[in-house]
Length: 273
Image 1 (cartoon, helix red, strand yellow):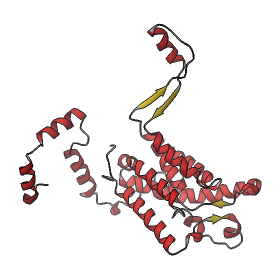
Image 2 (image 1 turned 45 degrees about the horizontal axis):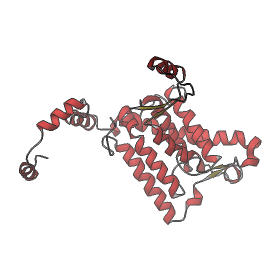
Image 3 (image 1 turned 120 degrees about the horizontal axis):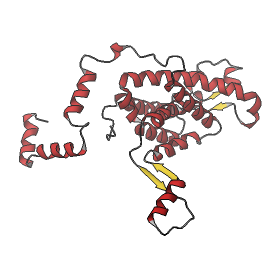
Image 4 (image 1 turned 120 degrees about the vertical axis):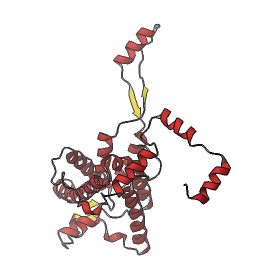
């Protein structure tokens, strides 16, 4: 399921391009100041309730935009696991839920910690990204692990070394570490507001997984997806392409499908590809 590109993930591709386009448009029109959220004065004084949902639509700077797109690209495997319909339902529920939860948590901590800047939520769907990251952390297994043993004892026999390794687990790193590092850049981009949004998103993601948030079992209408042919045709093409086959079967299939260069050129005109 770890395929390159956006193959089989149309919604993730749409989200990345939409995030790039909206951020570019707000930069060109000089309207970035309309998308951040401050409890005072936006909500309490001016009653701008639309900002409750606007603060998670665009990123105000290119650094956050770059890291968010990179994280979403690495998390595209979640859409392959959920399916496009369930993934779309999760994104809608998490966007609405984290928008409301982020503002509510900001209001609760504003009185006690307002003097340290807890009155500002930076623009950008950081909470939604971390809700998706929670699904990635819980559902997607790591492909390989790298273990660093930290031991000061020296043993002469192999049995003693293995026993020392069992007693001292050391530090284990996985192939998912680069994704977490990219996400941490989002969390620490504009603290403390970005940290609050990341924490709210992570907690909401696990709450959604435990089905303790409203709308956890809600799904977008089925007529939005072509269940008669599109979804199953995509699965059929992936099965026919051997994406779910083992490495040995893929090697055998690739060997059988090899054709001479002249034959491949002729196939371009025959419509075989």
